[in-house]
Structure formats: C-alpha cells, structure tokens
Image (cartoon, rainbow, N blue to C red):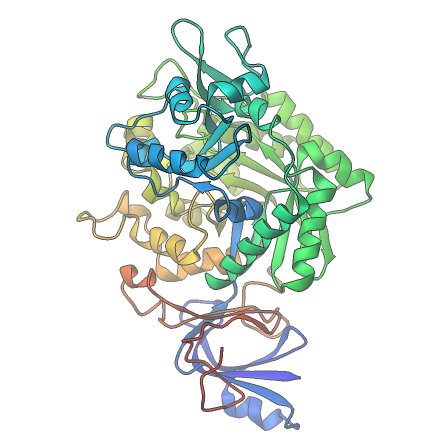
Length: 543
C-alpha cells in the first residue's frame, strides 16, 4: 500500500529551506515528493494510507554516525553513574547497587566523570574496597578509555606492583609502586577480560532497550561498534540479526580489527548484509581520550607536562592495519582524538588509499592542526563528530590544551568550511544518544542557561548545518548519499517528525522539541500517545 504524507513542514535537506507539500511512499521507498495536488492527481487507487502531519515538521530520518548500541542498552541495566555531580553521590549509588548483587559476583558501572565533581576526585582502590568489600568492582569512565577497580578486581586480573604497563595502556601506580586502581586504555582490558561472559538473554535485552530508546529519540539508524565484545564477532552479530528481524532500524556495524579475521573467515564483505543491517569499515583505535590524558598530542599536556598521551599503535603498526583492510577492499574507521594521533592516521590513509567508491572515516578529530586540515581536504574521508563533547569538555579542556591549541580543536565549522564531509554522532553511552542534544550543542556551544555566547562561538553551526550532520552527513559517511539522508524520489522512506520546526525556533527550544513520530522504511516505529499525527484521515489521534 502507498502512503501519502502531507500537511506539515516537510524539509528535503537537499538545500537550506527547501520544502515540499507532500510525499508519496511505497514499499519502504519515496516515490514522489512535491505539490500535494500534483501527487493526488496521479493516485488512481483508494488503497492509500494517508498520514496528516497536522503542522509538524518532518525531516529525513536522523542517524547517529558513531555509538555503541549494546553499551547504550547496558546503561539501562547496569549501574549508571553518568548523572553524578559529586564523589559522595557516586559512592552512595555504588553502595546501593551492591546490595542487589550476591557476594562474589562482579559489580559493574559506567559513566563517572570526575570533571563534574567540585573536587574532581578519582577514587583510590582502597576507598573502593571500603565501599565494595565482597565483590570485584569495575567502573568505566564516561570516555570508556579509563576505569576504576578495587583490589578484588586487580587480583582477578593478576595485577600487582610488578605488572608492567601493557602496550597502549597505563596501570597508574602510587609513588610506592602499588596499583591505585586507576587503569587507562588497554590496561583496563586486563580486568575486563576476567569478567564472565554475559548471557544471550542479557545481550538481547540490552540491544532491544537501545533500539527502542533510539526510536523514541527520533533516530532511524545508527553506526555502531560492538562486534569485538560480548563474546565475539559471531555472537554479537547474531544478536543484531535477531533484534533487527523484529524491529525496523538501520544498523551499520563497524568491524574492530581484532575480529577482522572472523569477518574474513566467514566470507563477509563490506556493505549490506540484509535489509536494515550493514557491515562497515574496519575499526581501529589510534589513541585514548582527553579525560584520562591518553589522547595522543604532538606536545605535552599543559596541566601534565610529563605526558603527551598514549599511542595505541605505533605509526607503522597503524599503517599495517590499514594495509590489511585494503587487501579486502575495505575502508577503515579510526578513532583519533589528539593531533598526533590524527597525523598517524592521515599518514596511513595517504600510504594506503581507500578503494574507489567508498570513504574512510576518522572518529572524533577533537584536536587538529592547520597543516592536518590541508591534508584532510585531499582525502576521500568523512569525520564522525560529537557536538555534545563541546558541552562536556569545556571549560576544563582549556586546562589540558592551553589556549593556543584550541584554535583547531572542536572546530566543527572550520572543518565544514574546508569542504570536509562531517557526520553527527553521540558516542553513546558516553553522551546522550538524543540527536536533539547534539543539534543544540552544534548551534549553541554552551549548556542551557550559561550567560556567555558559547565556547569558541566562531565555530557555531547554523541550524541547517547541524541537522545536516545527522541526515546527509551520516549518509555520506557510509557512501549512502544516493538513498539515505534526503526526502526525494528513490530515497528510503525514513523520517523523523518533530512537533517544533528546528529551523524556526530558538536553540534552547530544540531540547524540548517532542518527537511526534519515527518512521523507518515507511513503517511508523514510534508514535507516542500524545502525538497529533492523524493516520488514514481519522479524527481520533492514534498511538
């Protein structure tokens, strides 16, 4: 059956302010987009579902270009510390959660951020031992590049004063050489590897919760990195297949280099696996994160001159990983936050050009340099940006970097002005997966209510540029600009419908723009009870 969408502000996103009166869809694809009277003239059958948008604004379906979907679902199951504003609050939540868990079993939490605490406290393992004496404890930092553990967890991993730092990681130790319980990057994996494998029921619950929540936020798709965890490539891929078989959502799965051999052995290739499920680029980490000072910088940190960060791979090792991807005609997606990490990545991409017709991806690009901008412009590459990081990392990031390096840091407008393809994402669960928060952050560059004009206000995006990150930008990142990210004939019938028109309201109002409907492949996957949308011209509102 065909569906006619009309009576709303329907934005094509082909160019700024362009709207159409109506859209006709069929079998998950847009057939026509234009004047309502012209489309109705061509309809020869009464078998048409009519959806009256009732004045709401409709956009191409919003897609998050980089997140961890199962991890997002886990925050709805495990201990979530992301809202803690003090060490005392964090300690209270840990103690409360521990009461629910039998002695000896692992207590796992996510999302703590000491920069939200007045004293910026980082717990010592002995303090964690007092809080959780009868369980091994693992608390992953908001950036997912650091973790806190107690003594039971260190013992489970065999970590003591004689344990050397693993490649690409740091076991933070006291002046007496004893582990403090603070583990950076690959060092945290020493403990994570000791945690018992979760059940398939757990994985299904986590992913199902994530998809439902993303639908409620107006998201029709996400590019996610999960396949190297949760029991390995096959088990995790099957979880996505099972959940997406029952739920319409477009998932694009990055393939971590450590499970790349499984990907090849099973005969997979880059691209569409089945409707709604794609296998994407080889995922590589080049460095860590700013919060734990493991992002790799070309000069030492201003507030810790003894370190310039951590290289997960050497310059040559990174090139070799890219070369392995190229043997299979694969693009790569590389995590790079620091400017030296970005330099490593650009060196590798220049040495091993991407196959024609696809693009490499660089994830984050929080710190760059003018010379690196010039080199990026010459590459067929897309950048996965997280606008919300501006709100999370300022003002403390200035302490890390100093004012001089900020010129090309978090520089979203500068990147776009250089003609570089940029996509919008959350890195959820590190930040809220809600695309409205990312769109707001890209426009305002400050938290609501703050009295200033925004952090680095010269880098503010226009509302059109901000929405484009989550529509056309995410489509171009995976070379799908021919059928995703626009409202036009031949494109997928994926729509995000909001009660407020993002192009006609103040930035702060974006955060309260209710999702009226989420549509994937012509299927309404989310319609709240209070939605004003009318289906089949019925007078009663439907849910």
